[in-house]
Length: 237
Image (cartoon, rainbow, N blue to C red):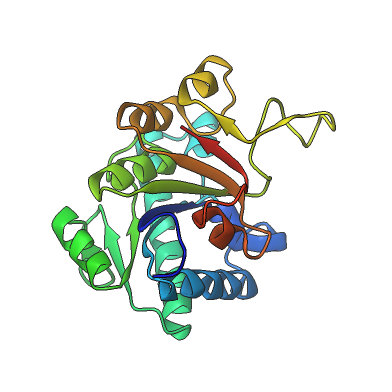
């Protein structure tokens, strides 16, 4: 294995990242570049699982605020994550990475049903596993799904890919004086209401002592550097 600090990794990708600058749908150039980054990491011996959101296609929370039934909206959002997972699988396999999609909602024609032991076995065999359809239940975000799956597969670290450089004390998009944290505790994230993830996901990581790295995926090589333990993004502990 390359000089990576971690062995088994759960990477959380937002659906918005897959859309690129177009803001909606899936940008083939973005997903192709992401596949190349993932291939470099996997070639270095990392056992990689991925949880992907669906916000580039449908956002259940936004729809529910407009009057749609929350459960129904969340189920539609889960199906959007399956579409993203299949697109990412196709890009990864074009790049030469063996991949399995596991869905929390049964759909045998396009994905395996999520089974924890089978997911771990895939990782041990060097396959990338993409978790789709959330937990299969409404009212849970993909961040919470990612934290749950990371704990279930006994991941060494949870990596949350974002469009900013890490965790700030306020929104860097509106405040140029926002301060970036290099390290911060889960408890401080909760008490300061920093909105890194929803409180359920944060609490799950904190209770299970799972380290979290929040980093900017838009900078090529950031993911590799973070996995080597270099000071990239923010480490939440």
